[in-house]
Length: 262
Image (cartoon, rainbow, N blue to C red; front, side, top):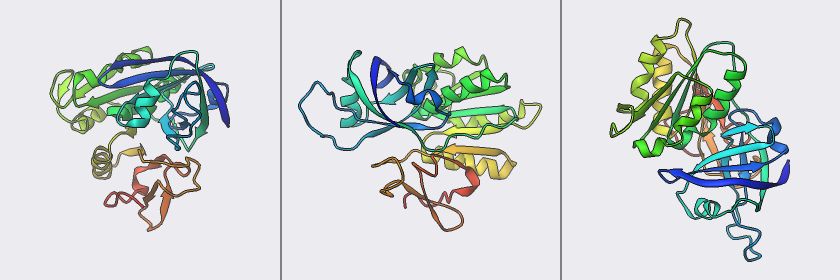
């Protein structure tokens, strides 16, 4: 599973978002919803393990040996990653975690902010299978949806929502869900990734309207393989689960939404 990949592309695409593309054989067998743990420091720099911990990134897309990642520079680690150059090698650990369970039902893919990352790979798989699906993406501003055009390769049914109305509809991404679900002739399965408040709201809608919903949780991770228990979440049955190993994808009804961290 560990691999030294080659960086093919790593460039800003707007709104502090970057697209990283690496050449990887290990990630060719990935499933939508899985993630990769990356060492962010450059091997050409000082011989250091600072920062020590890897950074988990959802797999954005896989096309042959080309695996791509969508990430936002929010801290020291992702800022170091943004400085990595094409031609450099990068230490990868993946694919990790449990991905989405694709069913025969039509699909509504919902991504909030950087939570859109696992949705592109899912859109590719659904497109390859000839499935009926709609993509709904939301962000604070239109600039933060600069990557939305990537989804046009796989679906012409793309809906955009921004908090400030600068692109697409104005409002929260969850506001559009009931209306979009009503457009399907057959009830769709919902697949979602984004901030906890967004997912919690979707869970409430799913319970109210009897939607089928899988959620991909975002969590801070240390080991990424289930050993350190740094990314645990609470389940409805009173137990805890490791987001990295038991998830990151869960059926919404399994999660205890009133509690954040284990």
